Structure formats: structure tokens, C-alpha cells
Image (cartoon, rainbow, N blue to C red; front, side):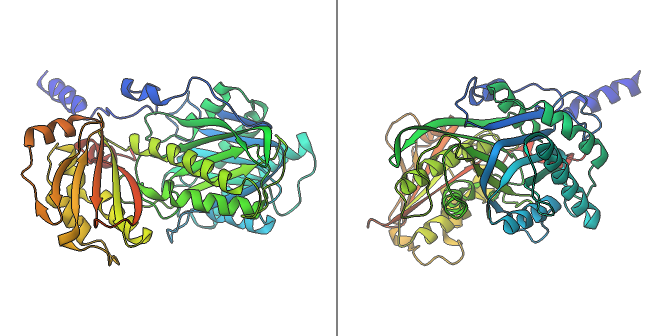
Length: 457
């Protein structure tokens, strides 16, 4: 009886409290981030199918498929990690060979990253793409031989081979299940989740001055909760639009948007081996083509895409592993955008800042410390630097440091501000108008250690 009691206590101690994965439950606080309807781009069909990449998963989708009824312009940004996963290598090669044109599909599995898996892993990624190409070829017409038209993505545990036969067997079923309803898009977004506690899906409609009478649509899904820090996209993401954009313009638009969205978030400072963010544009809505910066509508499309990507990236931070706070770090009045972003990034990934936020401790000295050691920054001058907390309730900012001089901080008000889920940290590098950069991050909690301490079990 004593042994049984001890075992029971042990099991209670190690219950996972953080996630949806195999229970399928979504934390009450996260339900507000899941859309109940959407406005999706024409000509795209999606599905989420259960493969059982992880043997314990017998119910929930872990294979996502996105297919366009017509060839697309395609663009992507990839991880700069030197240990690039097999699907990253395969997808980069395919897009380069095609010059970003004629892309038809994206296939993603969760549960296994297919990273650091050698030649066998490369063959597995290639075979996933080929199987989707075969389905497209049989249904919609010939696909160019030896090039392929499918972007491949994988996410999960590093260093393990895919159960490739199971995946290849289920891809045709995923293709047969394609649809364009909101439920189809939500199932596809759910299929790419790992330690995510909720599926991340957004959509919206827009117009462009190049074709003002035409209604365009943009949809995106992403996954990520840990191993999140930029130098590309820091996760997996898929964007689809029915606007007509040629490949070179699409790559330029995506790169600009990513630098100001997915490359401006951090959960834990770790960069994945699998990071990929891809966009497909099939032009199904019609209208005048966007061919480059000189095109009417290019700037508007750039700004629409950047705002959309930023909103999608914020969902990743809100779902940071074990996170209890969403923190905006705004660095202003910098001599350059580069300096402002480096300072914001350094604060965002400081464990001391993040643990202080979790502990609701207004320890602004840690913010200043991180600001001071930001590498390659020339515009930080201590006697010109100011730091404030900006409350989310619209009340006045709480000044912590003004031009290098510490303020007498109202600790009671500071504690009230830190009780809120959302918080902004404002760092002014001078009083002179200058460049601004924004970073999004979260706190660092006990739960983060719990999640990552037993990630493979």
C-alpha cells in the first residue's frame, strides 16, 4: 500500500499540464485565439489527416496537406542553422530549380522533425514530395519530371527517422479529404502542432489599388511554442493568397514581412533545424499582376502581408511553452533600425529579464544590463537611455529610468502592471527622433523546464 501511494504521488507530480497534443483539450484561456470562421483564398484546398507518426497518436491529425488547383508562385525563408533538416534542403532545392514558379502543394508532418537523419532522411523527404506530386498529377495534369512541385516540412523530435511507409500510405487519403471549408483549414492547422496548446490560424480579405474592384484573400497557419528565436522564421508557417504575384516579387514581399514579424519574436532563444515559412500565390482571384516594387499595389501588398505575418507570429509567442505573459519590447529613438532591433532582441532573450517577468518583479536593472551588452550596437549611451513599463489598460507609463537616472518606483503600481497578461517594455535610447524596432517575447517559467525536461517521453 505504501509503494502504491508513492507511485500515485510520483505520477501526479509528473502530469503534463501544458498542452493539447494527445488529450485534444485546449486551455480555456487560449480558446479566444481560435477562429470560428474564416475568409480563405480561392483555389486552395487543405486537409488534416491522422497518420500516427507518434504511435500513441491514434486520433488527431498529424499530416497537413495544402494544394492549389492551379500552379502557384512560391517563396520561402528557411533556418540558418547549419544542421538543416532534410525537408529544408529538399524544399530549397525544389524552389531554386523552379525559380519559384509552378508550385502546387505543401505537405507537413508533425511528430518527427526528420532532422540529422542522413541520406535516408533526404530520401524520405523527397519521397513525401513525390507522393503528393503523384496525387496532383493523377488529378489535375502532368507535373514536370525530376523537379517536383511540393514544398515539404516536418516538425518534432530531432535525430529520428520518419515512419515513412505510414506517411506515404496516408498521403493519398489526405489528398482525397481535401476541402476549402473553415473546418478543413482548422484541421490542417491542428495537424502541424507539436507542443502547441492551440492551432494557430488566421485569414482576412483585402483589396489592392491595382485592382480595386477585386476582393483578395490571405490565410496563414503556423506552429511553434518552443525552440523559438529568429534568423528566418523560427518555426513552421504557411501563407496562401489568391492575389496574382510573380515569384521574384513574392520573395521580396515575404522577406520584408518576415524581418518585421517572425524574425522579431523569441520564446527561448533557440533556433530550430527545421524553420520554414512558405507562401503560395495562385492568382485565382484575378486582377493585375504584381511583378515588382514598381507595380501598382506592391507597397500595399507588402504592408498587408507584414501586418498579417506579425499577427500570426504573435500567436506563437502567446503559446510559448509554459508562458504566462505576452511582452512587447519597443526600442525607440535609435540611430539605426539595426541597433534598435539588436537591443530589443537581446532583452527578449535574456533569461534574467524573462524570469523577473514571470516572478512579477519590476527589476529594471536586468533590462538595462541586457541593453548594455547588446552586441554590435553603437547608439546606446547610458546617460541618454530611459526605460518604462507601458500598461495595457491605457493608464500612464511607469517610468523606471529617465536619461540614465533611476526613478523612485511605485512598487505597488509596478506589481499591478505585472499582474496583467500583456505588458510593454519601452526603451528610449535618446530624446531625439530616430529608428524604432519591436520585438515580441514571453516570460520563462517553471513549466518551460517541465515541458522540455521530458519532451521525448
